[in-house]
Image (tube, rainbow, N blue to C red; front, side, top):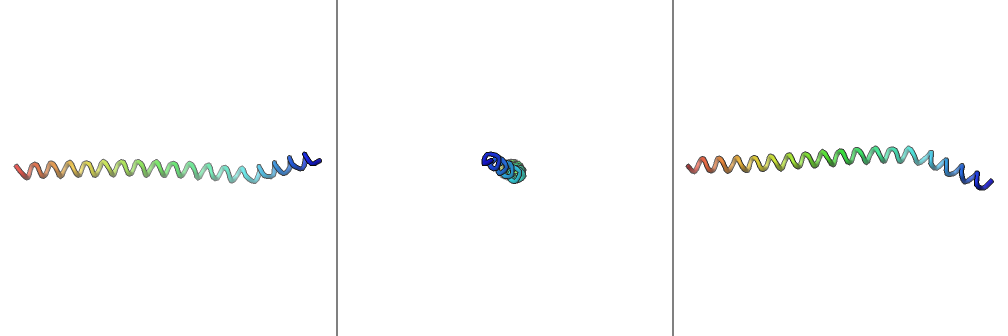
Length: 65
């Protein structure tokens, strides 16, 4: 009887916790996607800064001729 009661509690806990776990997994996936987007944005920004630096160097070189 005690074993059946414990099984019932375990099942009830699983039923309660599974939707929470599913939500956490969804949030984790969204957080990873955001982190990936931020990384790509930062990379793009770094490339833009590098391109601006190179353009400035070219302009300075041309202006000094």
